Amino acid sequence: MATSTTIHVQTEDAGGVLSILENYLRRGWNTGQISRRTSDGSGEIYGEAFLCSADDPTMFAFGRGQNGWVMIHYNSFSDCRHLVEKISCQLRCLVVLIMAQSVSSAYHITVCRDGEHLRTLEFADGEWVKNFGKPFPFEKEPLGHNIGTPDEPFYDFDEKDMTEYCKNFGLNPWADEVAEEWTILSAS
Image 1 (cartoon, one colour):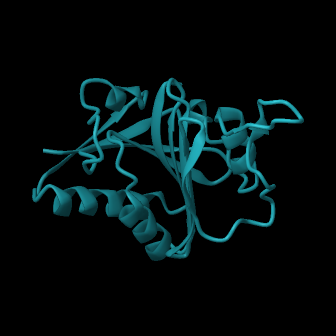
Image 2: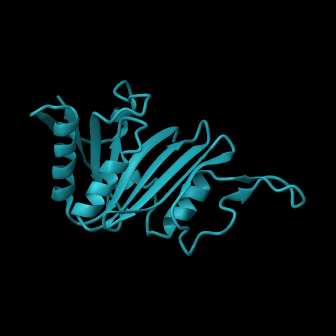
């Protein structure tokens, strides 16, 4: 994994998720037409179509994940918080947004349940950039793992730490291989 921007939705209502995504693209890009097709992989949105900015996404790759989770990859570095909150509110469910860039060791997680923004954490360049919301009971202090010495600790938060964090929600954030088919939505 080099770059990944994914929304994970704990729901059985795949149609509801797709409807929200289509409406988001229609309104956000002021277009009446949304392209919808199927594909055997989500990786295409990380190619030339990826927006190296915080602009709103123009594409989503939707797939069914593990244990009742739906995965939505998208093509930008936007935190999509308004979309995450909307999905969580309308479908009355848990939604976890994960943005990761392993090359630069930057990791972001936002957690919403039933429309309420519970937690946002972002670790980049060796420090916490964002830390919003009340820590969950499972969180240890400090988050991450010590890469320093016992006398001079220095904590890092990486892919392994993100995986462990997400296990507390019953989610494996890197389990894309579960989805056999992807629905690709794009603003036309």
